[in-house]
Amino acid sequence: MPSSDGKRPFLQYLLLGTAFLLFCVVLTIYLIPNCDFWVHLAQGLDMLEHRRIPDADMFSFTHAGQPWVNWEWAHNILSALLWMHLGPAGIIFFRLLTAFLLCLVLFALFRRLSDGDLFLSFSSVLTVFLLVQQRVSDRPQFFAYLLIAAVVYLATTLQDIRSGRAAVLWGILVFLRNAHPSWVLAVLLVAVLVADRWLSRETHLTGKETALLLFGLVSVVFATPQPLVAGHYLSLQFGPHPLHEWSSIFSLGPLRYSQYYILFYLFSALMLWAVWESRRTRPFYALVTLLLLVNAYLHARFAADVALVGGVLAVPLIAERMPGTPVRPLLYALVFAVAMALGVRSMQQLNYHWGVGIDPDKVPLHAGEFIRDHDLAGNFFGIYSGSTDFLMAYAYPRVKVAVDIRVPGLYPYEFASRYWNVTNEKDLRDHVLSLPVDYIVLGRPDILSYQTHEIHVERILLSEGWALYHFDDRYALYGSPRIRDTVALMPFRIISRWNSDVREIGAAVAAGRFDELAGELERLKKYTAERGGFYREVLMTLYRQPFLGNEQKELLEEMF
Image 1 (cartoon, rainbow, N blue to C red):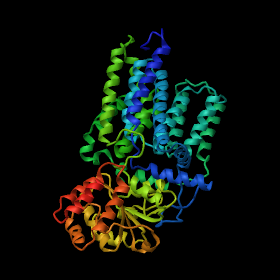
Image 2 (cartoon, helix red, strand yellow):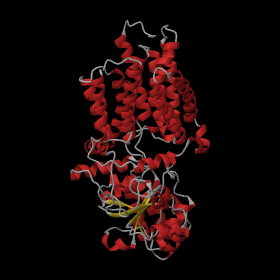
Image 3 (cartoon, rainbow, N blue to C red):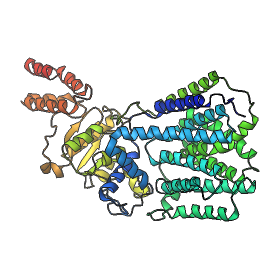
Image 4 (spheres, rainbow, N blue to C red):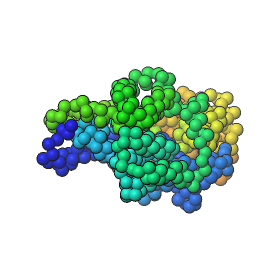
């Protein structure tokens, strides 16, 4: 039953829309982290530059020329256009807009299914968003959620196959077909919604119109310039693989007891009840929802899909059992406050940093700026693999990588797994230094600069003749001996990324190389002065050393 008496609907909708907007602003405005987005952006930039959808890899030096089918090319181009014209702010604004539109579409859908119950619709939207929140990103998948929600809304209200609504539905499906593999789910949902309406005799479509609708759904399968290749995607669903986000909920360890999954378990119980209650009225949709729920437990990344789809079953059932009395504004405020608190806590657990721009703690942003400023190009490897995914886009088209996130679509699991976590000298020498690598990026977002493993890797690189060209408190860029004569850059020969062994610096000062040390400190200041006090930390470390004389300390004071 409706919770509003309809006296001032415009004001009610304005307040609810404002609440959704505030909710989305707080939970989606964060710095762009390390994620698949950067590879998608690089591909979009390449397609805009060359005006074609590639059918082979052009971003790696290990699999260059190998067949590559880009399922998500349409979204890649959209991201690239936003990036080219608006930069990181455009990407973040689009994330916010997608989230806000998703809330509005879900609200319209739930309001229709609940016979106008504003409070139930409002609460349901917030609940679904909290369950989708872990997939809120700049990747094609999050935008696909908006399109799927729009498809479900249009399919539940479709009365005339010749209407503009039907044309919009088909257009969204065609775009989704070229933007994300979840087009399969969207087409399936339309089919089962139509089938359920036929069984319950709720549809106004004739048999001929229904056949035309089904023909339109089949045509979506072929509405793409890309070949139909499903093997890699099916291997993600059913084959053994090391990708964490495709793991089952049961294998997540302590994470499966986190706030997010506790909420999902409660939602799962609601879904089981809704499936059971809908087995006669919406049998096909109930079956699909049940299969999605099972799949979510097998592959945790699909928990958000269940939330997005399951509301269609749960909302009308709850509306039938709720009292029809109006809900006081205080209850709206309480629900909103609880949802906001849960969302903010989830953001903290995801380690997102609120703001507009790129997160320098999670990607080698300043190394990327250094690469662009000095026009460096060649074959790059990142000890933390995500670092070169970022550089593919940020320094496009200068960077070729050993491996990126296109697993198993381009790189076999066995190959990619060699480079995801290089933690010992043997793997470094056998798998990395044996490649034709020009530059290595050292550093990772979850390990600070003083970790022993990273110090050990740097010492191996320096002992092999690699040159340190740039570093800050998290990332460092090293050049191979093979490109030494082609790069007009002065490497750091005395100070290193960590400055942990001051004995080597003391030996250089004792050998009369203080002027060289001072030059390196000036370069470090130039590279890092606008980004906090890292170079000051280095100066303070040196200032306290007994091997420096008074004149040398005075020079450090001037630099400080």
